[in-house]
Length: 155
Image (cartoon, rainbow, N blue to C red; front, top):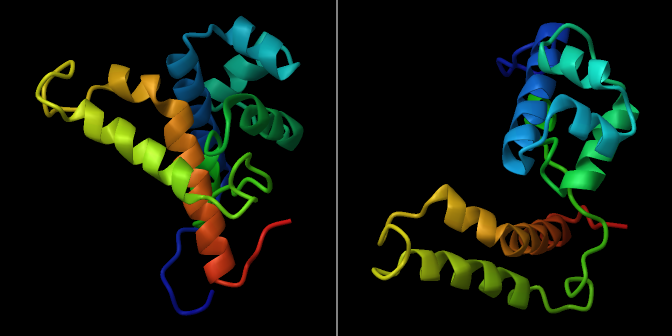
């Protein structure tokens, strides 16, 4: 280690992170183990075992989760290494105009905080789900700009 107190990445921590991913995807998409397994091209037993932290999940299935459910779907796992996924290509971002994606996400948040919204100034999970694509696009635009600014680049 490099002098910092980092928690060791153990099989238990890995399995717990994967279980959190599966629970979040199932809840957000209202999927059963079987339905999620169909979307991921694996068995329901594989999903159940990973959800119950009984076994490790194949990396190919993790990649399919990220592909099927969007950037950030496997962030709980990547957080073990203190990183996040960064999309390599985003429509409207690579053309030098990331501002629109960021502004659209911000506009959605501002609308949710209007006194006439669902619960007034309090943002609800339902409202957030309605603008999830805009939030993801805005995050991707910011991630792309941060990568460029830090010299990491993408692609």
